[in-house]
Length: 138
Image 1 (cartoon, helix red, strand yellow):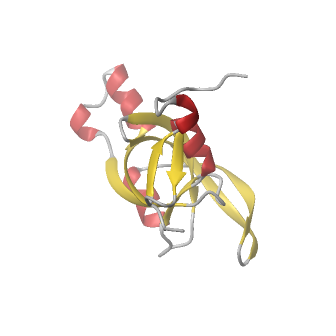
Image 2: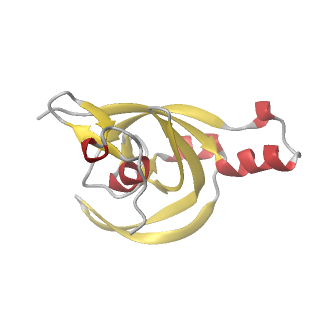
């Protein structure tokens, strides 16, 4: 099976709120285009420290995390708006070790209603919903 890499636009949600409230200009929104490795074994959207810093995110709390090398404590940061394939969701960011690839885990995939297609090596709209973005509220 293939490896899936997906580009996404990230924007600092606090900055988006600042624009909405009128104390920031749209040109002041910290944003980035990031290439993610899709990893359904990871839970969150995870970024290395240099990306977190560039987006101006702040620490919300710390979480115990199980990695391939054992248990560690990771920082969880304020939210970003992630946009992929014209779908968007706001979510917190978990740090990942410096030099590691940015990871797109199963929680953002669920929120965006995206489905990994390993044969085509891409993300697609969830086939259970005819490819359209549908939120579940069960």
